[in-house]
Each structure stands twice: as structure tokens, then as C-alpha cells.
Length: 508
Image 1 (cartoon, rainbow, N blue to C red):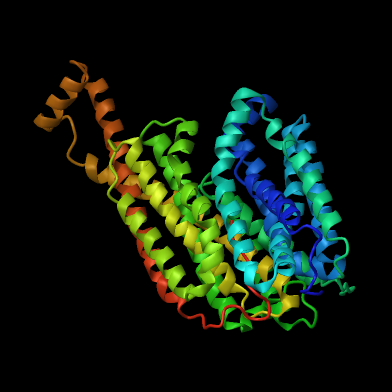
Image 2: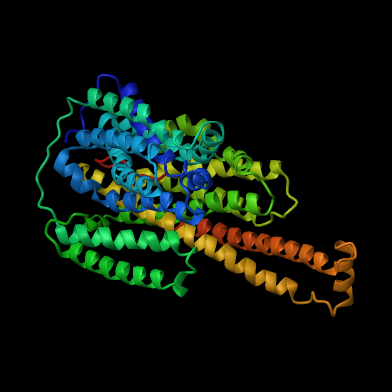
């Protein structure tokens, strides 16, 4: 695999690669707001419709760490082109699905082919850009990965309201065909050395069962009331046993399907830990703020989208400058500034209250964007700076897989924490409110206009709201300290950060 290949048109190649990545990242969130409509149209419950999200996440989590193996077998350009075309095909099949079973099957297949797309995009961008301009390419990719998840729910909601839900999948078809044709044409002369590594069946089977079961536990845990559910207990045991076998086998096998020995590199280890934890905290913010806006402040999903969207403004404006000048300063310093900014915005949210206005919510999102703009590219560059050129696809796939898993853990833990703490605060706040307390009795009569029961219901709703609000503030206080602690983690990495591999790896 040569690092000196230059495509005939660098700009066109970049557009092709970025479009495919944008489409793939967009699809991780675009269906979320459409679930009630999909459930209604296909005649299933809202609970069953969440498998549209789970099936995609499970398959993608399984295929991500296989990127290195698949790249060695087929070559980056062929694998990218095939995955992008198959993504377009499976998207079309999702759109024409006539039953929930059919939709879940094609979403699972769509997730499986989506896995390798992101790591290969990073590896190809590194290969086609000269070392001096790699920072720019990765800053552009980081911007795409920040903007796409924000655009997903807004675009998904708009398409579902104005057209019909299948169009959230149909829009991928022309984009996928265009991107795959451009990349196949521009990079067809790229010489790639492929090999036929023996298939590590033990690693593959334990990975599929272990990670698949873990992802299902994380996605379904809250709905099933965690370990009070036999299904969750059994699935957790299956996951733990298979992951334990997988780790032991991969570390001792001569030709493992996932190369865990990459963690012998100091910068890869420090960068991956920082990426996984920072992304988990970032994911928690992206999940909790829209939920809180809708549940506590009564926003519609579209308005919740508008309130959170300013997050993408500064990353878009700063992409050029971060790409051009970031490598001139110590990247650990840049990442530290990013973590401090994101920590401070979390502390600001810890002071939010029920009567807060749209402007203040949107402004905190805007300032968080500064942290996001300075976060991805330095971490991505540090992450694979000490890997060999032939380790980039494997390393990128492994880091992206762990980051995706971090997001799943974060989603489960954050919603669980928010719900449980809200219940605890509800109990504390309601302790002194009863019919034997004259003050409570008077308040119930007044609020219920003479009907004490109606008044009690109003007070209960107010307490529930306040319970969720206090819990929200607590979670953000905790997230703020997570970001501050990450400043210490990133300083475990050691320069230089522009080794033979150049900058790489990533997060969306």
C-alpha cells in the first residue's frame, strides 16, 4: 500500500469520501424521530420499533473491528466501493419494506456494510493527501461527523412530516451510487497489496455473539428494567462468556481477526482512552438535552432539534483554521482546551432550570461547538500517530468500534441515571406533602379550584418535573468533571504526533 499515490482530482475524491461518510453517520440518527410513524404504518408497538435502531447498531458494532481483516483481504478501495454500493442497496430495501421483520433485517444488513466505511475513509484520506495537508483532510472529516448526527433528527423529522418515512432511506441511494462511482474512478490506479489471511473462526464467532449480545443488553436494558429481567441476565452472561473467550483467543492467536496488540503503542492507547471517554460524555449530552427539552420544557422534536443545532456552527466555521494551523501547536494543549470548554458548558447546564428560555439553551450549545471543533482532529491525529502505515485501517476500525461501544454504554447509563435520580428526588420532595399537612391541603384546594384530588395531581406533576430537573443538573455536573479529568489522560501521549502514518482515526 503506497503513501505516494495522488488521485487525478483530489477535491473530487475528497467529496466522494466525505459524502459517503456523511450518509453513513446521518443514518445512525435519522430514523430516531420517525420511529412512532414507522410503528404506526407497519402496525407494531413503539417498543418493537426500537429494533430499527438496535439492529443497525448491533451489526455495525460487529463489523467495525473486522475492518483491518477485510482491508487486508480485499484492499481499501474495493472494500469501500462495495460497502458504499451495498449501503445504497440495503437503504432502498429498508424503504420498500412491507413489515417490521423485513425492515429490521435490512437495517441489520445496512449496519453490517456501514461498519468499515468510516475507518477506510480515514485511511484513504491519509493515503491521498500529502503529509502537510493531512490535518486539513481530517478536520473536514471531523466536521462531517459532528454535523451529520445533528442534521439527522431534523432532516428525518422534516422528511417524515412532509413526505413519508421510506424517503429517509431512499435519499441514500443516489448519494451512495455517486460516492462509490467517484471513489472507484479516482482511486482505481491505487496499488494495493492484498493477502489471503486465514479466517480466525473462533475470534469471529465469539466476536459476533459477544458484541451482539452486549449491544442488545445496552439498547434494551432500560426497557426491560435491567437485571430484574431474565432476558437481560441470560443475554449478559452469554455476552460476558463470549467476550472473555474472544479476548484470550485474540491475544494468543498468531493471526487474529482483530489485532489487539495495537495497544502496545503508547499514543494509540492514550488517544483511544481519551476518545472513548470523551465521545461517551459527548454522546450523553447529545442524548439528554433533546430528551429534557421535550419532557421538561414541552418542546416538539423539531424545536428540540433547532435548540441543539447551534452545536454545529463553530465546527463548520473553524474547520479550515483547525486543519491548517492545529499541527503548529502541541495537539495535547489543543485537546485540553477542548475538554475544558466542554466541561465548562456541562457545568453551565448544571444550572439550568425549568423556566429557561430557548436563547440560553441554544447559546450553551453554540459554545460547546468550540470544544467539539478543537476535540476531534487533535485526538484523531494523536491516536494513530505511532502506528505503521499498514496498521492504520485496523487501528482506526478498532478505535471507532470502542468509541461506538462507549456511546452505547453512555446512552444506557445516562438514561438510567437520569430516571433513577429523578425518582429519588421525587420521593424526597413529596415527603411532606399529604392531606394531613394544612399547608399542603390549602395548596391542593387552591390548585384544584376546590377539588383536592385534582390539586394533588397538579402538585405531583410539578414534583415529577422538578425531580427530573434536579437529576438533569446532577448528571451534567458529573459530565463536567469527566471532561476535566480527560485533560490528564491526553497528556499521557508523547510527541511526535506526525509519525510515518500521519494523522488518522476517528469519531462520529
